[in-house]
Length: 537
Image 1 (spheres, rainbow, N blue to C red):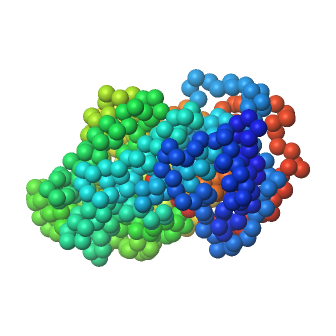
Image 2 (tube, one colour):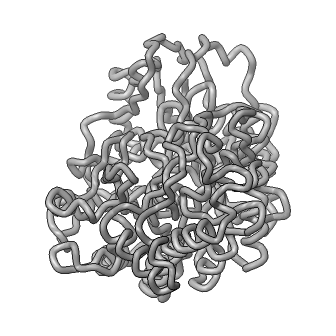
Image 3 (cartoon, rainbow, N blue to C red):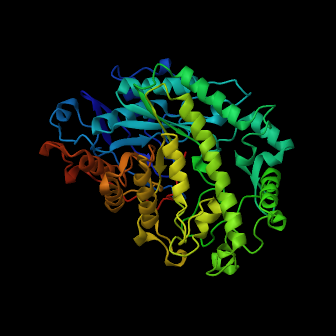
């Protein structure tokens, strides 16, 4: 597969092994030593030059003759005529989740540099970079290491792309990125800094919102620690703010989303039948619930969460709480769900307001991600949303309170799921990502909140791209879209041609006929089925 990046220089990704996804070392050595490519001595270097993707197959894909459409030579690029309207959607691509490794090196630095050039020539506006709390403030509170992130910002700047930063205050299972070491050490002796389910099992991938204002982190509150992180980032990246860095998203919970960790699977399966469980059983949440119930004169309601809810993998109808006419429709159900959701909304408001205050004097947009819990949306109780903390039912719009805090803090909302359609959802889960997206976007329009979209699944193909385009262009609701994310699959023959055509359609590029791929240039064996899952920062 040849990607012509600048002039006559070419990057040959050689032979892609699907089980290992490694590029030909000999070809890479020859190409990366070219004087046309930036030397890596100016930025942190990773040991690997390729992306790796897991697959149970190990089938080899010969792609040496596949032509990457985005990598046009300078001569061909000059034939592109842009007819992009002023209000066109800005298009970004997410960098790999493990762009910066746990050992504070840049993984696949040279491959990323090549990918950035290809995206620039294709017409992409910018890239999104996950910045992990567990890497940047790994060893001790207040001790930050921005070295590799600064190097990446400089790499993006030199390419001429814009940069959106995602500040991630959660952990990741794929790739394995933990919370800061010093935070995890505190959690070993104080497990109540984490969310807990009714079995008492802690969720160690992010802190419980119940400790936001408690001095549980060596005498400081999590909000104070987050503020220190914001301030240090702002100061360290001041040279890029408003020029290269145009947006910053703030992590608000699991996977960065404003929700409870109601689904405990490391990778959420959209086909699972369960609606998840309420996460209100850590010591501080229970204390808060007890005080709230006593204040309202119903102390018995504050003894714990609902007793008649199903387990993680059980159908919502297997117990009485979520069923039609169930406990969710009683005064007690309204009491609990109102309290549970209000805790989440208040948490989002606390963090967004601090972030907005910190970055108010630099020309960047501040945003946060709202979850798309679309399973069981076609039921009356919407149980997947309720356990996640969104009090949205057939009788109540739970997104009004959420969009109001974004509006009040002048923040944008990031919505995943732009690639999802109702046609591909299992009938038994009564899902509807399309209806849920429409509801949230309607609330955003009502409150004047700008929307940034993302895809949820690592997948490709014309139908997926058409679904994304449909959501982006509908009523001009989306200001920016980030395609998740760069890596081996992104540049594979199964995905990249469709993505290239998607960009052309979105950017309304008129290409010379010589630029179009020729059928004889595209010879490739089929990729085996891959485990396509959510990629979230």
